[in-house]
Image (cartoon, rainbow, N blue to C red; front, side, top):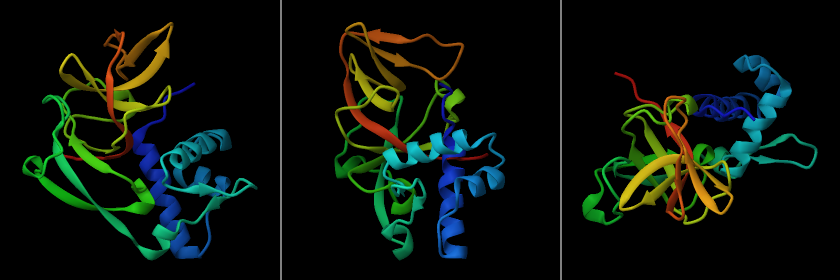
Length: 199
């Protein structure tokens, strides 16, 4: 299965918001496919399903995209930026908050969210680059294939998590880098979005 690109994920979410505001209803999968130049309806479905898992949108039983109350009300949530992913274990104390951002619930969902600034290039093939701000939901479990902040031997890393043969595989989305295979690690958060930075 091809890796979902975070930049495209954001574009799909933003298009859904814009379309709902302009038309008073949700776009069809075909609307999304044509507007964003995606290759097939199956590709659109993969991104929409991923956004649903993140809590950024909902799907009705017939498969149509369900408007979110948070979108219609313009609700936002305050999310703290607590450091860089390569600088050790995130500390969630107030004294370690660099700044806070009001993020739309329609894009990033709700829950116990925090942000980190990325450092390094291990996730570039997933569209996450050095200096981007990643938004994570604080939780200590993750499903296979989710991108997580994991604590391994006192160091944090941002990787895609898999369970294989009784081991934990932390997979970098960079073909030049190798998997990290460990017996155990502590999941500290699961990725729900990426805010691109330029310059």
